[in-house]
Image 1 (cartoon, rainbow, N blue to C red):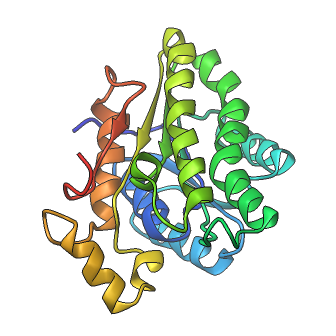
Image 2 (tube, rainbow, N blue to C red; image 1 turned 180 degrees about the vertical axis):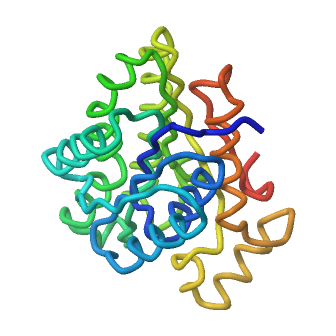
Length: 247
């Protein structure tokens, strides 16, 4: 496994769940981590403490990634602090599940803005710094829902499917600068979102997963780490850690 020493990674929505696991995994490989959060300050600061206690380097930066001005300030702070950005993991996301008949415009727009628009804001903000160094690794955290859809999640599905299309286009544009762009499409992973489901819903989901269990955040994080350490010839792809639920 290649190391990420001296590389700097921004992980959005890194205070918990898959984002936290990704930040931890990249830090263990030597990367300096910018832990982005919006509301979960205590969790973000505890993650920074964990990373630094293990000998790594990290800072927590509050920014609403659905707001381009916030994103620009986060990127500027990263450059001021470390002088470079090598890795961007667009992980931040929310869900506001509701049937189409009952979904409000606010619920639609919040998910599209946080889950999809944010990837554009963050990617466009880091591109000049990656182009300058002729190197970059961008991972967009999509979802199995963006591939197969799901009842009550039209806003989430649309955002996550949009991330896949965005990934393909960005990969074509940025390849000549040695910047790879890939989409991670996890299935149902044991995060707060899944753990909050009722037992009946969990049983129904598990029955649809050939491997018979939910994923672990660390399993997705390992996949991300592989892409940024050894995936130099992989770009524009959808990678599917989902237990076989969608093939």
